[in-house]
Length: 154
Image 1 (cartoon, rainbow, N blue to C red):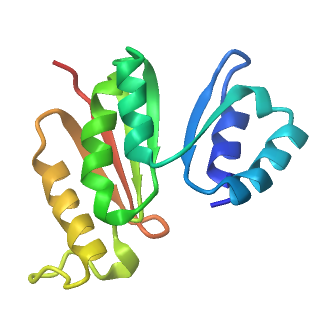
Image 2: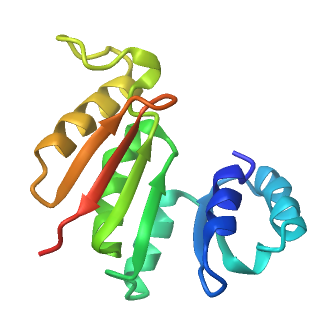
């Protein structure tokens, strides 16, 4: 929540690479901005303050379909499916969508779905990604679970 993931991605980019980051908290992203600038990557980062759904819709309105190589989803869990559907058209063929926290503390993958709304949302998205013909996906048991989705294109 303080821009660490954004910093890691920005540091890995080539000289002309760019990151579009979305966050709702101006205060915590201020912490991130200081670290981005100190690391020399602040100019590579297009930070958009506001709900992620609004940011993704704005990128679509800007004509950015198929423009991005990768998306990293780590936000409000009950909206993960909406983020996925909005980000999918923005990613180029063979691009990557990385969805974080997909094991939800080891509470997913059981016979009965979790009762908590966040757990239900993550469980449903894991099942959807496993069957979605638009992507090839793999759920990795790294940290709290990463679902990697390679976009197959039309």
